[in-house]
Image (cartoon, rainbow, N blue to C red; front, side):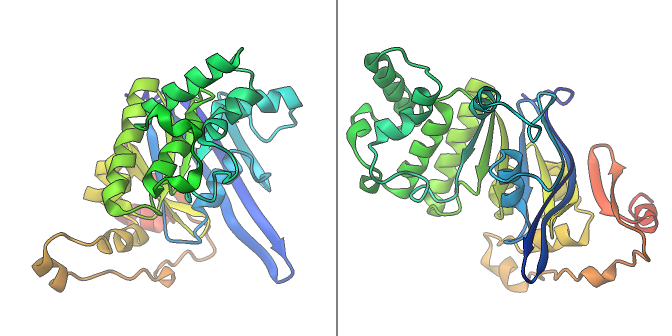
Length: 308
């Protein structure tokens, strides 16, 4: 279980702006939050809100425009030597949305999984390398016979399992899962999420789980951050967020989750979020704690109404 006092990751004022001929796109615009060792933090929001860019900036696929990402107290975006970067890359891994696009079609499954093992010198002999590959395949629910096949010979769910095995190969502490189930059939989604939960228990992993499907995020996450236009508007323990959403945008997102009951589904009212309802009057909204562990982006006046 996660230790809510042991911060593995600290994100402070993180910004990721892209400068184009048409102006500046503020994909991530001042995020501050922590991820605790052993927990899963879910990050949700509609397409284009900046959640995938957040994950990619944390792992340094993008250089941050400003702000800090501290991993085990060390600044990820500080100047690093090649060997320091290599060490960091081993501790933090990523699982991508499209399991086909992220696997090299010309490489066998064994070579895909062993790429990290080779880079970090984690196997002394070819025999040891292959033994590690076979063990990883079995860990993610595949057979060692799959090692010599190519990605196109597998289903979407199996390919995502190969992606998970590749991430696990270097024994990371932290995995960013960027919409890892959105390209999969619904029946397969639960299998992949259950596998991730099992691996977390067995290996003490910490996850940032990025998704737009709120129902699946609730199932895997300890806490959930809701993103809107590059900012976090609400952050709370998973059950609390579903039971007691405070920010109007979170309420709108939750109202869009389909219900399994056709009669309720017919009469259900979906909420539409209108940002103009906020009267910030020149005041910049900030994340304030409305109840223990439950933060909402609001003005001072809104905070007063949320806490009464």
